[in-house]
Length: 115
Length: 458
Image 1 (tube, helix red, strand yellow):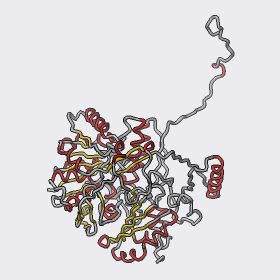
Image 2 (cartoon, rainbow over the protein chains, first blue to last red):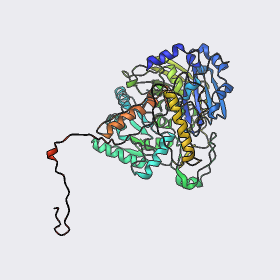
Image 3 (tube, rainbow over the protein chains, first blue to last red):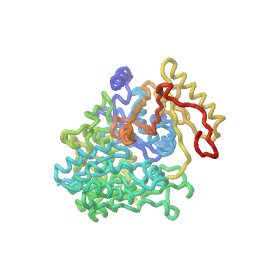
Image 4 (cartoon, helix red, strand yellow):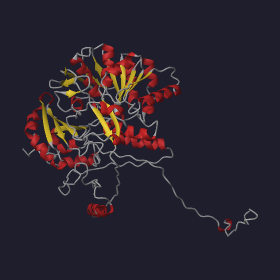
């Protein structure tokens, strides 16, 4: 399984996933994704690339109503808070992943050349 | 001397052997310490209330005995207080269960305390309720109400410890409060020393999800590799009287504690980092510094606190009908097209075989599922990375081991690789059929009348 995923990564073009890591968490119908650059030098790149507007566009199909970005320069990252993206929240969603736990990796699939 | 906070579980369904290495290390270090089991999420509590309706023993954490059994004696012998929200919807019954376990283990007297007051279902109408900032739903009608629980703070937990409790059984409390309470009791922190309460709360926040701070839910092969994930060391947080804290894990265990693992957990389920609301304090993480002070030792400093909020969060659960799931597989040539055709046929069938208000969603797992929305708007846009689903199937004569095996898959939520979601578990009795051959002459067949008068078969 890991061999396969490594093969995928070798052919994949440059994406957020190549320079940053992330974790998603949920409360009700609100999702947060904490995003951090692996190297502190990439922090500014993260700030210019991952804007509230871009994130909102990326999650538009999920019905997101608001994206709030909190910058954490000392940690080399940011916290993104997305409202109404879970289509009912963990107790109500029809999605296999009602928590939205996998959505950190949807964010990480953002292309780096999409500024 | 620092106070040690060990984590034994980070959610309901977590690894039930995780606490063993943590408690062994706490006992070895002979420092004041406590062990916390955090097993109650928004969904877990709703499930516990639902089970309680049908089963008087169904209202608390079903794995409570399995979690406590391997460590209860060592904790008692070493004065390690145990705190857990494993009481869920019914802390009183959970206490009885702990006593039963203690008797079975011949531990002599064990002091067990119940935390009460979080259940406000019967008083909901009398409470002045305002909406949580991100809530859009109205309160349910009284008939549909299943539960209403307030997130309590550390105060009732401290009270339990002051009563001499060796095991504190709570229902809905703020998760970090389970860690903050023993610190308040031990160091005598004041209830308005906001910076100290904030530090203790963040010690709890970092520990409350178990291995999520020590290598669980972190691995991304080739990018973020984690050693020996099958034996992850669950965290121990060392806290000084001045609120200084270090995150570490028991020696000889798998996993890792690094700046990256700590960062990911620091903001987990946090919204505004300058105002993380808890019942005991509003935490300001704006100036937090994270430093690797030694291998598997990370110091967190710069945590600030502001006065506690006026209102406490209350989670209300209500009945909302039924949900169902069903899956079928297609493989080999043209499999995706056949799966799509199946979805189309099913969609059309449901349009005239089910009422119009049936809400349905179609996923093709392996092609596109969890990233999609209910209406399927991403379908057809291509998904280069795939969408893989790990399936485990097991069988055993005893239900216990089938439950254990499937629960190990569930534990991947916190202790597995990064970004996993959508676990489903089910188990049922198996019915087997077999076929054999017999000798013809050994078979006696025919017809027989039963006589009404003789009462005997002919």
